[in-house]
Image 1 (tube, rainbow, N blue to C red):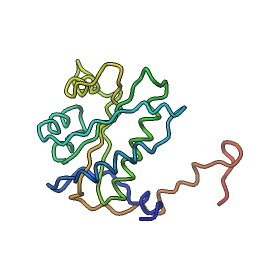
Image 2: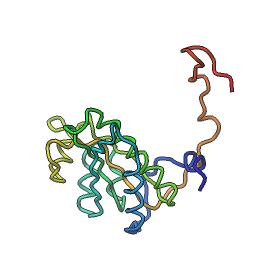
Image 3: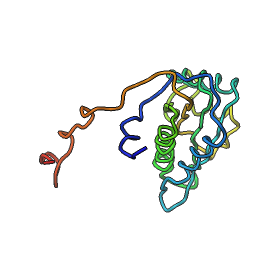
Amino acid sequence: MEFFEVLRKRRSIRRFQDKKVPGELVEKLLKAAFLSPSSYNKRPWHFIVVDDKEKLWRLSKAKLGASGLATAPLAIVVTADGEKSDVWIEDASIAAEHIHLAAVALGLGSFWVQIRNRMHNEEKSAEEYVRELLDIPENYRVLCIIGVGYPAENKPPHGEEIFEWGKVSYNRFGMPFEK
């Protein structure tokens, strides 16, 4: 699939077929993440692959908006060592986006569940909840969870309306960009 086609087809998919993602595709998703750039090549990330139905159900309770994980056949929890890099958020975000794009290229769907700076309930953060559930060390921060699987919904690719040329300036802010 051509790169710009992958970009246009990438949509958040939250409903999945009851079909396991084969190990070779999981490996390709992880390879895509490992190929992402990181500041000073520190590569602070650590990925937790979850396909256990009970754990997926429990992850779906991490915060409001995570319910799609209950039916996803696979989740990849994106974490990074906050002591290894002061820009772990950016590094982990790029790796997560590589997973999303690879999913589309492999015929899979995916969606992002934000964990950092979100609450599980009034007393506990979503990050603390996920850290406890998956035994994640304190120095590792949890950025997000990516639900992955074969789509059970069909969303059209992005159209031309996505290109907001008015949000682009030329040489200085506010100077219109001419295509």
